[in-house]
Figure (tube, rainbow, N blue to C red):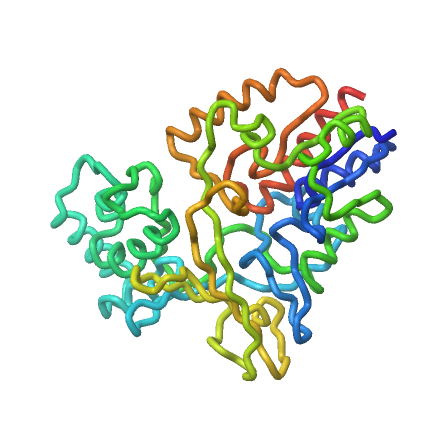
Length: 367
């Protein structure tokens, strides 16, 4: 008999399992996939740690979270500096002085600010009715059309005019020549890959893979006093109120017989006519010098039952529906929900770690 059955061997489940085990509790972690790590799973190919489910860069300003993950892995000094490709032109991200200089030939922050203000003024949008109008009212037409529009439409699967304005509350505009995408104090990639880090988290804990919880839910529930469920909360309740919406992804990964394909770990393709949103060259996450390279093209896709849900569609309609499921969850005595899918929220990795630690603390208070 276990104290906790943890459904999902991703980052949330691994952190929670580690914490409860360290408190003297006996945990069983199960996952329907044949590997641990969830979507941060990395697999070695040609000596390169491939981010199988898309690029994951750990970043945080929370020292407690940073110190915590460093217990399980040494992190390198990787700094996320993606670039955007638009019709043969290359721009730095996030939008900064390098971007503005490339766009308009400006040199000083005042010149860049004046250009953005001029375009915002020309647009004359006072009450944005959709994402297109919202973005133009923030950064002007040039940045929107070249660097925001196509990428966002591919990501959401809808045209900018059909997307609500609240999706883009702000756009990061920096008037410095700094290509670091994140402002966080800490940033890096675990040396040896994320899978090794999660392995260390789960050291000494019982783990069973290729186990579908829903195929034998009663038996699994009977194995533990409490259950942490990190899958889709609407699926847990058999979609009794209807399906929450998610976006899915499709990946095309290939090994190339060259040392360096694109010169950067992440290149975003911001024109709508290019079907993928970005190409990831994995070796650059760890400053690889291998003779070959591995790239992944990332295609956003509509989600349907049976597909892998990668991130929730947190618009007003879906958030309202989630609240109905959350009310069911709050009434549970034995089952608790966590993670991006269980809490129906777009978490970055540092948020996942923080939320799992908070949940473990709450459970400790009940012991």
